[in-house]
Length: 91
Image (tube, rainbow, N blue to C red):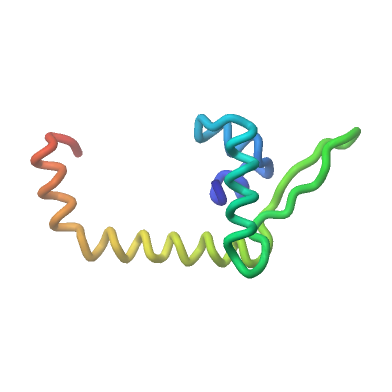
């Protein structure tokens, strides 16, 4: 969700990209914002100029840290991932 908001500038658009309902996307953002010391997403109301959403500095940091963990995990488990892919006949 955070990646989608960063790329698309919209909670609704990020939700659609993840095949989520509008309500579910907003609930997820609300849950994320409440789960951290500071909000991760800041939304602006719609209107004549339209609304939007952006990651706060904390949101950008959380996304970066998550991607770092993801990369490190993939590197350290590369052999096991390759074996699992072979067993599943996927690449």
